Image (cartoon, one colour):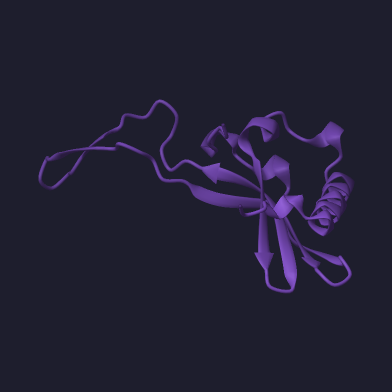
Length: 122
């Protein structure tokens, strides 16, 4: 059985550092309410580094928008069965495996995000 990356004690230590760095840049009292239902973590083994991120998924359709699209030239109706989502990285760090030194790769101002474009993460 394959172990999850997060089960590695060194990765857990990197995640703790990641959370500490995120909260230093974005104190809990300043995090928008949408953040808790529209984001999820991501961890990637990237060779000599672990990349850890907080991501959101951007929905290309607006809420309550119809799932029926009409081709303007032919008049043909098309139906959206499932939406595709674009990942938006809000905060990302890279940690060197050898010493767990971390570098911030992405840090977005959470108040600049239009949360109406984001999908709820279930």
